Image (tube, rainbow, N blue to C red; front, top):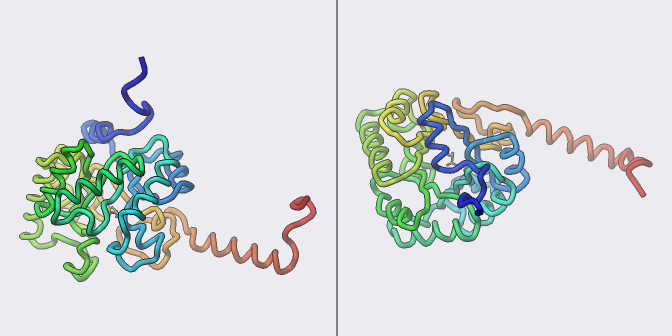
Length: 272
Ligand code: KIV
């Protein structure tokens, strides 16, 4: 009899929850294309997020607001073709789920059907709970996202740390509990004080994955192009750069240009 699990090597929402239960930290990174997804997956990351940060790092927009559902599906299907092990979660873009749970369900179904990804992420707390519940009725796993929610940048006005004041921290804890109760399998907490993030992680049974939220949470996520040092002008305190690819790539390209100009490339062995 064939297995009921589509790919037995695949990380699932359940295995991610199991990692929290066992006290093993969860690794998550963004990817937006096939080639990067292959490398990130081969390295063994647990979760790949096809983030709407694609709007910034892939398309050069100032915010995440312009990216469309069709564009997210294009990125997600490229990532799905490149990753055979990681759990693949896709951001629902701005305007595809807020204020209309039927539209939210349709958007999530399109992502699942057209990209082959394994779940969706969306930003917000109690105000988007109807959308979350409706998506879950279709058996689609949902990851929440609280704290700094970049799709609301024009409401916040800045990308500074969220929930430093007690009232906002209380609302965040309430939202986190509501997302868990609604059935989210996990939650991203972005740019909040470490002590608050740890408190949320301890209060919930679902994994809390942090970005700029300290080490007391259940896992970490970074934007791939930031941690590889491709976006050298973006330098928040929470970001650790594991490479400086901006310099490496511009150096390599300059070298190539010089070789072409000086007729050092191609040489005898590089031609037919
Ligand atoms: O879009 C994204 O990359 C994200 C991460 C910052 C969590 O939502």
